[in-house]
Image (cartoon, rainbow, N blue to C red; front, side, top):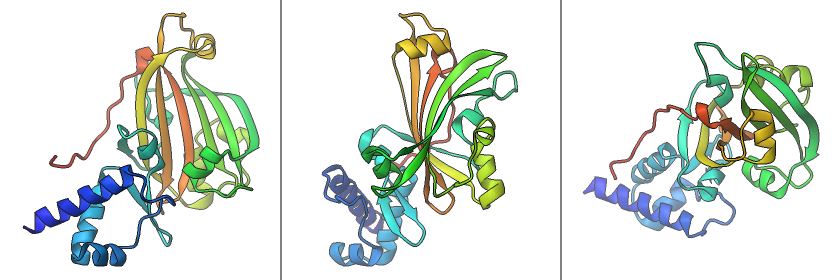
Length: 242
C-alpha cells in the first residue's frame, strides 16, 4: 500500500506539471505537498526523488524544487550524468578527444527563452559561444552554448578554446555534474553542410541540453549539430518501473 501511495502522488504531480499548473516552474515545498496530498513527508520525498531521477524536476540548494525546462520543451529528453564533463568533451574517436575551433564569442542580452532555461532576470547577459569540434581536421560538431556572465565573469576566448567545465572547476571549485538532453535527427541546414562537409541530402544530428552545477544552478544551455556518422551516444538511464 505505501508503494501505491507514493506512486499515485508522483503520477499526479507529473500530470499537474504537464497541465501547466505550476506557472512559475517552482514546485511547492515538501511540507505543503504533504498537507495537500494528506500523506507523510517521507512519501512526498520518495515521489519527488523519482521525478528527480527521471529528469522531470531538479532541486536547487537553498531555492527549492523546479521543473526542468527541457522536459517542458521536449518530454522525450533523457538524462546524462557525469563529473564535470561536457558532451563534446566526452566524445572520442580512436581514444582521442576533439580539437576546438572558435567560430563566435560575444556577450549578448539573455533572450526570454534563455532567461527561462537558465533562471535569469530580464537585465542579465550571457556569453554566446560557438565552436567547431574536429578530429584530425575533420569537422564533427557545431556547438553553440549560452553561459551566464555572473557565473564566469572573467571567461575569455582563450579559455573557451579548451574545456570551459574544467575552467569552472579550477576557478570556482564547482563541477558540472548533471545534464538533461534531447537527441534527434533533422535535415541539414546550409551552415551544417558548409561546416560539417555534408551534402544537401545528408541529415544532421541535433543534441540540446541544459547543464547544471553540483549545487543545482543551471550553468549552460547548449545546442550541438553533429555529423550523422558520429551520432552514436551511450548513457546510463534510470527507468521507473512503468
